[in-house]
Image 1 (cartoon, rainbow, N blue to C red):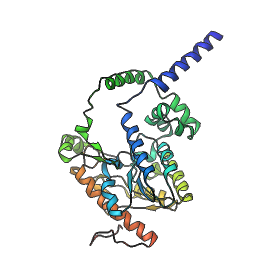
Image 2 (cartoon, rainbow, N blue to C red):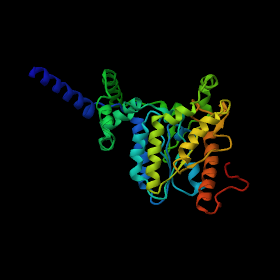
Image 3 (cartoon, rainbow, N blue to C red):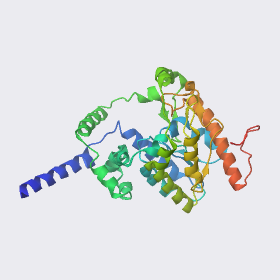
Image 4 (tube, rainbow, N blue to C red):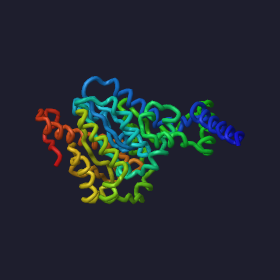
Length: 331
């Protein structure tokens, strides 16, 4: 019996050593980790109030801090990464950097509200924390520790070896030429309409489905957002809920919109929506219903900046000098 126990312990030690210290996914997980680390570094370097945008990939693809910052005259960080990154991990990384007077805008994708706890526990951030960010992992619930410990399998072993070999061979990653890159604010840039034309058929045939109000209200992501809102209120951080971008020919149901709005306003935080509910024609998108192409991204960000500024001005009684002549506050 003791030999079996020793063998089991040895296998666990080998597993932990391989995946915790030696193996890595620099091509697959390296991009979201680098994006998150770079935006965290930018946020930590800002002195005084700042605007932080947190979302999935709708954040960097459809919003542009480079455009928003000069309109609001407020330092801006685009902290969105991807839907697969757990909201609890995203919030845990940003909370130590948020100070009284900071503003957090949350144009979350609908999928983030309903993502199951099981999917969150074993998501890509579990592997990232196990290999590179055990400090944040230690501050999350024990179930996240187990998820991180057992986030690897045989496929992860094979892919790690392939990706490490490609990196060692100085593999030239072509993704920036196909999808664009990231600027200093954390915005995705270079995803031009010309590059996006290759995805025209995908966008034309996409049939996004909206969630029901009940699904939003009962979602585990909703629970994490609500906890973050409570924390923000207690720490003087102003949170503004918002809507992710989507096709204008698939409008957001009134009940779903009400459920999202109620989540924020019910927690004594603000909610902002544009007159078009952030809906645009399919020709304005790059590759998915959450990703505007660069030209539309800039136009949307301009509208978002003015609407956020008007909302903040009304809540604080400050001047609306930043608003362009003829612009109107959101309804």
